[in-house]
Length: 140
Image 1 (tube, rainbow, N blue to C red):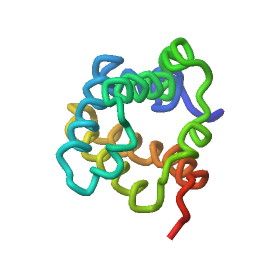
Image 2 (tube, helix red, strand yellow):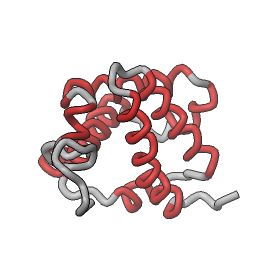
Image 3 (tube, rainbow, N blue to C red):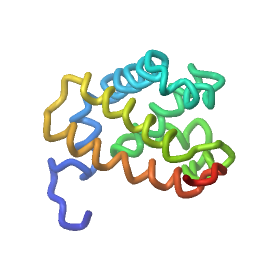
Image 4 (cartoon, one colour):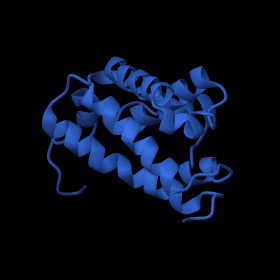
C-alpha cells in the first residue's frame, strides 16, 4: 500500500468513491442479498444470516470502512475481527465459493468502472479466505 498514489483504488477513500459512495455500497449489499435469496445454491449460506436486515447493515458498515470510508461498523458494534466473527459458522469451500459468487454477481450489477469491479473482486477474496481458514467447518 505504501506505493499507492492519490486517486488509486485502495488509497484513502478512492475505492469507496469508485463504488458510488455509501449509497452505491448499500446498492451493492442489496444486490448481494438479492442474489443470496435468488440462487438455490446460496440457501445454506443465507440461513447463516437469521436477521437479514441486520446482516445487510453490518455488511454495508464493514465494507464502508474496508473501502476507506468512515468506520461505520466500529461506530455501531465495536471492533470487528472478521475470522473470529465467523468462526462459529459451518463455512466450508462450497459456502465460501457461493458467497464469493454472489458478491461477484452483485459487483457485476453495479454501474461502476470495469477496472474497479476487477479490483474489488480480487480484494474481497482476502477477507473471504480468512473466514474460510478459521471456520468451524471441516475443510473438504
